[in-house]
Every structure is written in structure tokens, then in C-alpha cells.
Amino acid sequence: MGFLTDSCTLKVLTQELLADCNPFHCGDPGLDKFFSQDSVLHHKAMLGKTYCFVLDDKPSDIICAFTLSNDSVRVDHLPNARKKKVNARISRVKQMNRYPAILIGKLGVNQNFANLGVGSDLLSTLKRFATHQDNLSDCRMLAVDAKANNRALHYYEKNQFRYLYSSEEQEAENRHMPLPLKTRFMFFDLIDLQTE
Image (cartoon, rainbow, N blue to C red; front, side, top):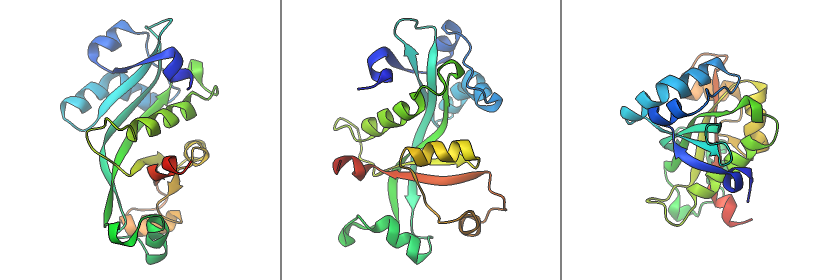
């Protein structure tokens, strides 16, 4: 299927795992600190669970790490044109004010594996996990508050995530946030996987 599912094992990122592994560096000091120190506390506070893929041939190497939590994609506060766009593929009788989502809170790829397609492989894997028939609950969307920089936004765009708001100005106004925004809310409609 892909490098992560063929050559790596998915694990919960725990203090014990961190102690057994080489330090994880993704090139972003804030993310490195989160994964090495704060992710375990985040999980204990029930704010998000952090997972990682470790290399099967060298289990001390964390290839990538990511945090997931529950969320929703709210459409009730969207301008009408945007609301219609999000609702376009949902039958009128099933349209809701918000759609269940899994939020990708933090995501980082080991800098030794950067630019090898691991990040895209990870998002493809998360999409498959989110739609697996054995999930405890259904969700319609994957969501992310992507850092508002060209690299992060391009990464999510390349992996078919769409902006919830049509512009940064519209998002700032509707979310009552000052410009320039530090993040942009993006989503992937998991129903896309059923039509492929």
C-alpha cells in the first residue's frame, strides 16, 4: 500500500517509547518539543492522542508522528456560498450544521525522511483509517488548522484538503481572529474515498 504500512509499525507515542527511541526531529523546534515533551501530557488531559510510525528494521527510529482528536466542521456560520459548496455532495435531508471530523492537531515527519513522500503517505493512511469499517464511530471529514505558511498550505492542498473559507479575510472575519492568520482551517471530505 505504502511505505508506512509496508515498512513501519503504528504505535501510540508514550513516554516509554520516547525513552527507547532516537530523538525525533522534524525541523520545527515547536513540533519537536511537542512530540518529545508535551504530547504525553496532552493525552493525559484527554486533548488528543499522539501516534507514530516506527521503522520495522530499526524500531528506534520514529518516521513520523501525529496527534488526533475529535472535532467537527461547522457550516452554520459560513457565508451562504461557502455553505453551499461544503454541502454540495450531501443530500439535502442529511445536511447538518456541523459534520463529524477527526482533527489532525500536530503532524511531523522525521527530517531524515523529508521530501520522500512520507507526509503524503501519512495523510493517505489517515484517510483510510478514518473510513475503516471497524471504527467505533463514523466521521465525514478530516480537518486541520494548517500553519499559514506556503509549505504547510501547499502540503495539504496537494493532498486534496480544501479551505473551509474562501479567503484569509473571510476566515478572520467569521472566526473573529486578527489578520494575518497564523493558521487556515482546511478539510478533506472522506466521502471522496468512496467515489474513487
